[in-house]
Length: 258
Length: 286
Image (tube, helix red, strand yellow):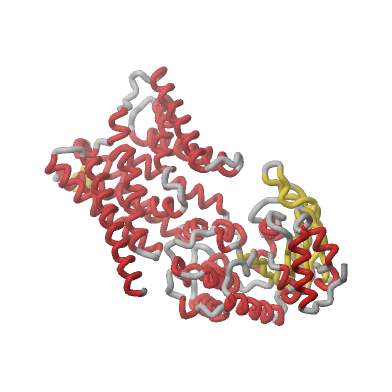
């Protein structure tokens, strides 16, 4: 692997006494679409938050572009889980997306016409320009997700960390996000995505991080998306796994036989 | 002229509280104003003991620092001790308030602190202490202090608008782009503490909370734009102060109480009107 874009060393995060992630070590390559998967409560979101400095790890550290987060923050965009904020906040779509420019321009300076162009362009990419003046409280789940993506795009970063962008969105939005990811990858951006749907994992991701509090596997999707590793990751939920592998077989995906 | 002094004082309190309250309401922590207005007591006591005077400035500084101390304790209990935020507020301000009462009853028998005044304020007596401004133009001392605080609050909010807005709207995202969420929290809390301390001296704790929560809540029902919400809540604060004052005058009742009742009444009217309008829109769109 060339210089890894994200590396984690002995990363542990405790909530109280309960570990959310335990001693996680991995390196992720540049320019790929990378999925972070695991069962509910396996620490996927916590991992993203620890990488972004939203929460402080109990032990261990992460590096981005082989540097401290503080030095490369301008290159990194974070898309939080949509449920984390109050969508009844009195703000328009434009207001939210313009926040993506706040820190680049500086909190105490006005946004320039260049910023406005970037905001417009970001809204166009997620097909929401027509909704710029819309109240955020009047958006559907899929539209909310697009607004969050547009805000991250407005930062014009190189590395995107997205927390469950596909959760609870409509089909049109899912397709739009998939196209957007492909487009971004073709421009050399790196995308790290927390995801929960095993059906789509193989088609969306080049690289996978499978975790269940501990790291189970990290590697190329073709190498790590196997029955054995999925069973290790999802543990007791074997029936689900069985159902999924059955379905994958039905679709004639080349996965190992039991 | 007395009418003018009292209304002006109430309006200044209304503006300060409406601005701070709008941020607090959106952060779901408006009761922190209640906490601060009670937690100031030990600060007032120590300021009185150390300065030996009851003049405004040392008392004000003592009260404001004690208020900020309360917000620090609340923040620590919520984030480090993982206690629910309302429980943190309840524990910390009752503790500080009680310490204040014990200190005053033990060592400050002659301290000039009136329980009545703390709760209901002394709006009616504001015109008693006049200070000359220019020539024949006089303003009450309280009003002058409030005017200074209003200027500070307005400048602080204009200067820090983006920081306050983004940390109020989305804390995790703010952290991810490297904005000091803690700084903006205490920046706001200092403003709230200052506002509460100078306001409750003139209008009492009840009206401070009514001003912090009522006008922003009314404005929130009427607009989907945060800047408009700030302006509207100031406007409703002023409107309620004027109506409340004349209501109190005609019924010969407490001004602070009357304004609080008017705020509640206006909220009920606006709430009913917006709910009716919404259900009408639903019928049409169906």
